[in-house]
Length: 274
Image 1 (cartoon, helix red, strand yellow):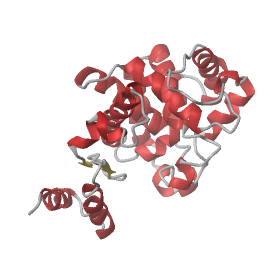
Image 2: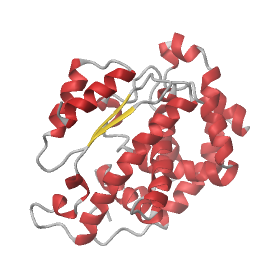
Image 3: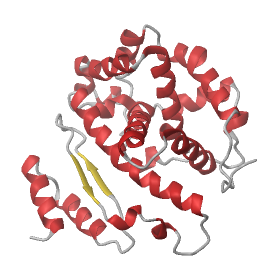
C-alpha cells in the first residue's frame, strides 16, 4: 500500500476509525504545500495520536508563497508547526494519565497543558526556543482576538470573565469548532492557557499538575452525566492544589496574567492592536 494507506491500516489496528476520518487523512496528505493532519482518539486510554505531514511543512519557503512575509514571520510559522506535533503528543499523554478522560480537563486545562508541555518538549528536542515561541503565541492570539481589544490593558474583572469563558461551558464538547474558535475566547485557551500552566508550575510544581490530571480518573460522574462535561476538573483541582479555582484565578493567576501581558514586547512583525 501507499504510505498513506499504510498509516490508515496501522491506525485501525489500534482502534477502528470512521470512513470520514480515513478520508480526512487521505485528503490532508495530498495538500501541495504540505499540511499537518493530527488525530487524537479522544476516548482512548492509550492516547492514540496520528500524524500525516510533509517535510514541506517545516520549510520557511512554504510560508512565503506571496513573498510578503519577513524572515522572522516565516521562522515563527515553521516553529508553530513543530510545536503542533509535540502539542498533540501531549494530548495523547493527557489521555493516558486521565484514563481516557482528558476532554474533561476543559478548554484551557487541556489545550493550555498541551501547549505548555508541548512547547517545553519542543525546546529540548527540536529547533525551538520556548520563550521565543511563547512570545509569538501571545502575539498571534492577542491579534486574533482583537476587535479593538488589547489584553495588555485588561483589568481583574475582564480577566476573570475571560478565564470563565475559556473553561468552556458545561455540557459542551470543547473540541467542536464552534466552541474552540468562537470569537469571545479568541482561542485564548491556548496562549493564555500556557501562562496559567506556568503559574501552576511555579506555585505547585510538575508532580502536582500530574496529580490533578490523574485525579480525573476518580471523577466517575464525568462519563455518566453529560451536564458535568467541561467542569469535572474542578473537584480534583481543589483537592490537589488546596484552593478552589475561582479563588486561584483572583489571587494568583490574574495578577500573573496582568504582569506578563503588560511586560510583553510584540515581535517586529506584529500588526495587532496598539
